[in-house]
Length: 170
Image 1 (cartoon, rainbow, N blue to C red):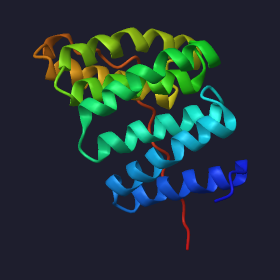
Image 2 (tube, one colour):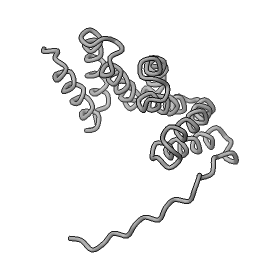
Image 3 (cartoon, rainbow, N blue to C red):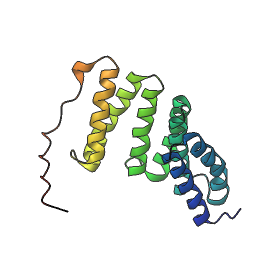
Image 4 (spheres, rainbow, N blue to C red):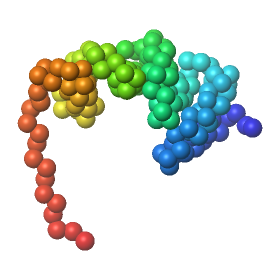
């Protein structure tokens, strides 16, 4: 099978869409097969290889293995931090997803603490109203409640803006 970058990207996309179509286990398996090829052809720290690792961890969790997903993100995060930098969007996404799978693996306090550490970074890097920042705020509130500390849930930074009304249309 060819190992050109275009072929590797196509195989990655096929796995992604296989998962999106409802077969998380098949997506995981396709990515598990693809990862060593990425590592051999492009290197273990190439951005595309890191993206494949990220996507593999995601579909591992979606296939029902939250502990393995957490562990894969735990291994991926320091590499993303070193290669891309601690505030790169892909690094922040890996931190976010690690926190989520930490909670899903049965550690709501760990998830809460990770989201608590991530929120000020997202606020500084992307701004307090950026969708990713708002998602971290939401997830922090969720995992604070799941950790049994609902009284400490963060309050919204501001009142949400009113949604514009849809105008006349077809």
